[in-house]
Image 1 (tube, rainbow, N blue to C red):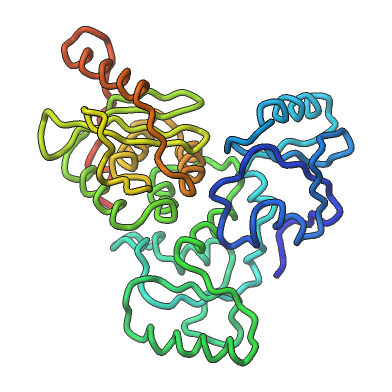
Image 2 (tube, rainbow, N blue to C red; image 1 turned 60 degrees about the horizontal axis):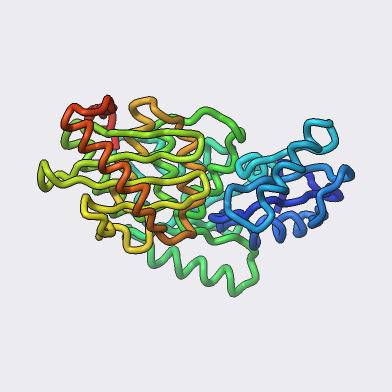
Length: 340
């Protein structure tokens, strides 16, 4: 496999836990760097080339972050966040051949950019019309499609014959093409909808988009550099609502007005959090890259109850509804979601 940037011989230190590390890489960030010939050390010092700082909680993270920032301010090391490190470690797809087998959840009727073939070509790869010995990546979708079974058998035959290629799920493929973009590239709503296919299951995405297309939502949002918190009203009754939140660390929770867990979570990001995230981006309250990063951290986590914080949000919402506090909602526009 060829890569866009050579890191062999470079010295790295990692600060914080890198939860939700992409599946196309071998192991975590340390294993990925070592497989590329880089040195990963535990001690922060001025003889390092890079320090990667992740948002996941880890013993000593705060102290390590402060020391790394001091070294960077002195011009002795370069700091990287998760997205910048992923961009540095991205595989070079410009010489690679892809084949796509089956149907894909990310495809949106009438939106050519949502086709995985178009995503691969936008990254500079070549798309083969069918399984062929010249392939480098085979991406297999969950959906049925004419010829899928025969193509899978062909892939199995090529693997038995010793052909070296990577077989990816749809989610891993989206992570792969997402790594090709510039680390701080501005991303809009359409890109976020696409990338979230790898952060939660397609059923929740479809239910969230159905909600946003059906009506305009008044989202009561609280956005800071560390969290997105808000109230999402239920479509089943005017008096029913959910307090939902996600933090930069990836911690998240969603509960009803009675603080009972949202039944839609089941250990993963629920549709109410998807609605909150997409709505916050669509209304301009937060940028898409930030939310994508936070939700990527949440993928490998279980919901974390925050009863006091949720109670405070619910009390503030009820006070706003009663006109006792000034908390004005952001209003979503259904038309902006029709393409999805």
